[in-house]
Image 1 (cartoon, helix red, strand yellow):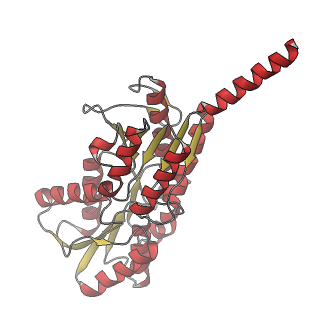
Image 2: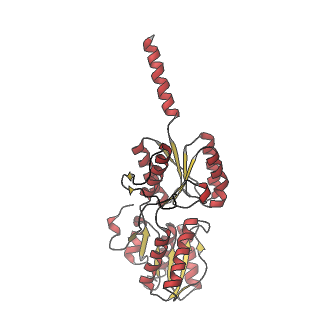
Image 3: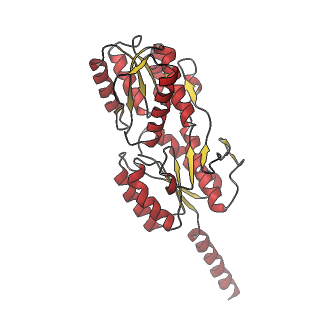
Length: 321
């Protein structure tokens, strides 16, 4: 009888531990593109290191409405924390407030949500630094005067818009000879659409000397268009892209600089921040394996992973992601 009771007790403890398992969901703008595929690696690694249920799920299209529906479904299932890269901060705001009302910890990562909707905002980079770095690199290739264009991801993406604005403010002050020929054009996170937009810009503006690409597929699509037209020496291309995707184009000169960070580290950092907050542990100074110490900015909310990495034809083979 005692053995039976003991077995029942052990089973009850096991069931209880499963029921109490910490569930952290990391949601990208969309799944299926290399950048967010790399982020998933970091999320899964964090889950294994911490011994928690770290899930990575998102829509197959960069659609805020799809994100909202997925979050509604997650709330029915029951989760402890959500880290989201919103496609449209305003569209997801009501469901994030619903998460908060249900005692779900909400963070943003990669792309900012509305400030009142999150406890922490996990940034890959200092937005101002990145925006200015991209402009400096463009000028390094095309010079301080001339026409250039911008191909972005989604026009509603808060992170991309912040980088663009930081760059434009900086360019207006430091490089008044630069001329942006038109408002940023959207590629909708599609390499093919970025290629199409770049071809249209090249045709519409024959004096174009540079194109900036924001979102990881955009610089590759732009580089393909420049490569196809044989304009490697006439049009400078700089943008946010990963080294493996950029390798071919950096080496043939159709892409001059690729700028980013390790998205796997960013995914891992988001999980660690959520876990530490749920556990009531101090974030400041905590050493995240493979990432480094956490630093919370003076606003008490923003966490910046680190400085940008710049890839060129000379150093791109040193990286593999």
